[in-house]
Structure formats: structure tokens, C-alpha cells
Image (cartoon, rainbow, N blue to C red; front, side, top):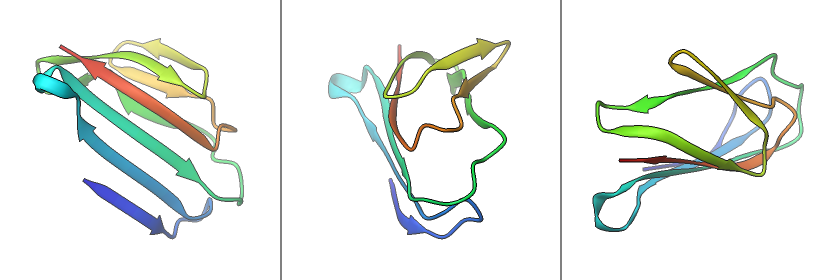
Length: 83
């Protein structure tokens, strides 16, 4: 599933969510163009009941309860959830 150049109050965003090989998880690729900095960027810690947040590349994250917080200043990053 892809969203390309969607306008937001923080600039245009691209997002691409795709499955990993052999149904082992999901990868989200995110990019934001210039614009005001968001106060926070949040991701779910779980996708469904099977896939748990595994890692982020290109941004620092911190996990709390069921939420993963991504550094708001990061404009391009990837997140992975694995079984």
C-alpha cells in the first residue's frame, strides 16, 4: 500500500507499507518534505496480533507500552515489524 505526495500541515509525505518475504513481517518506508516539525510521530508497537515492532533505520525511536515514538525531526526512515 502506498501514499505518494499526500499534503499534510507538516509537508507532503510518502509512505509505503509492504510485506517482508515469506510473510515474516512488514516494512514501512516514510519520507516527509520540508514543512513545520510535528510535535510527535507515533507507530503501533504491534501490527495485528502477530507482528511486533523490530527496528527503525534512519531515525531514533523509543517504545512505551503499545506505542513506538519516532524522532519528529527525522524526514526519511524505515520501520520493520516481525513475527
